[in-house]
Length: 112
Image 1 (tube, rainbow, N blue to C red):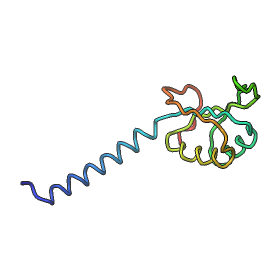
Image 2 (cartoon, rainbow, N blue to C red; image 1 turned 120 degrees about the horizontal axis):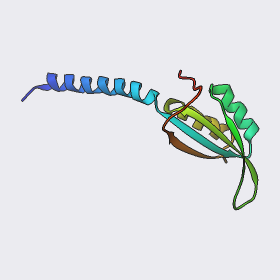
Image 3 (tube, rainbow, N blue to C red; image 1 turned 135 degrees about the horizontal axis):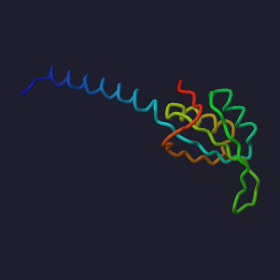
């Protein structure tokens, strides 16, 4: 009815608009990672070596095991999440990580 040429233009337009929306929207999405680990020092060094983000360390204790651990809390962009997952797997494969959507960040947060 409309021809293959118009169908191809439609696909190209959809792809381009999707990429633009993703670049604008995803860049502003923030996540908070809460990492429970026995290797807090090693994990902090590994994260700081590859990501330029601040980390808050909170003492934690297992409810069942009563074992002392560290909780590292870091706010990052959705684009940095893949890098963080890789860093955690390399530094402490036994770490437990909870990722939550962050609604707002007040104070200093490096945009780039």
